[in-house]
Image 1 (cartoon, rainbow, N blue to C red):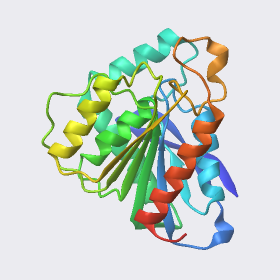
Image 2: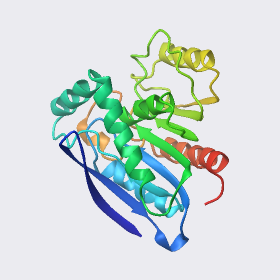
Image 3: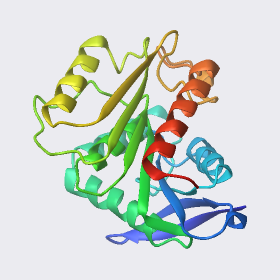
Image 4: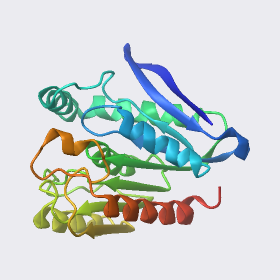
Length: 238
């Protein structure tokens, strides 16, 4: 398996993505864009890229920051800066998608995206940007700042995997998400898992001691299985 850092630039800012590909499976396979959490492109997103490669996909984990946060305050500052500048957010997200599409062995007609936390919100945004993604899967995305309305259409299928105890996805936010999805005629799924909090896929999150944040192995496993089913449905065989 190839698993390596890939350097690229957006407006002169150096970014470092991560490519994972099991080349022994042959050419022209579906590509998956992996979008990282609020701390940046850490080992968590890289692990998920390798897991996808192990399934036969070509996975590229993009870099939205150009650095990795070493503290919660730094992560929040990087996150707020991007969210306050939608054109820059879109440009960096599309640059990562473009890197995936120009990677060897990728069938550009079969592309999907998955994301975690901040990256979960990012893939939901990509779904509304006319990117041609067959599907997007958002794991524990923040849904507390959804707009009152969003008329942009969604072409691909949407899946959100949320913890019932996630403070960033309260019941009211889940209802608003459903309202927005229905308003644009999207093909969507919202899977809510009992006993799961925010960052339920991240084995390192417990060490931070954040209230409402915790790894939850059953939900991590079940949501990954749900993702695999959707990818098989929308991208076809590997």
